[in-house]
Image 1 (cartoon, rainbow, N blue to C red):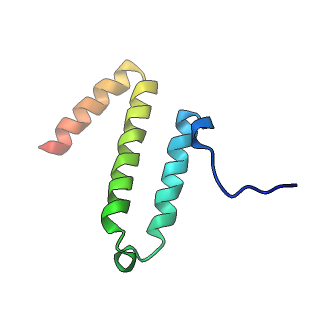
Image 2 (image 1 turned 90 degrees about the vertical axis):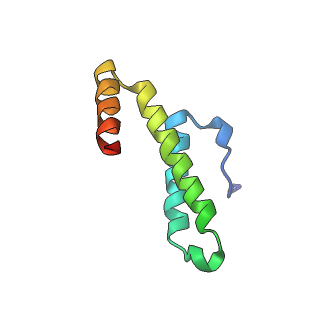
Length: 78
């Protein structure tokens, strides 16, 4: 049986892709990013992944959740 060592990302559904990205960030953070000079890139990956996760959850949520999230963001900015 042939074993593959890569992922075909275009076959993932939205939630599966976001989980893959979260797993990737977790794996990257396990290494010494400063020595590898990857701090900025992994930070950008982390921020993009969290943004995608927030947008995905927003599209799947109820109207009350949208109102709560909007209120919560206002509260954290103050």
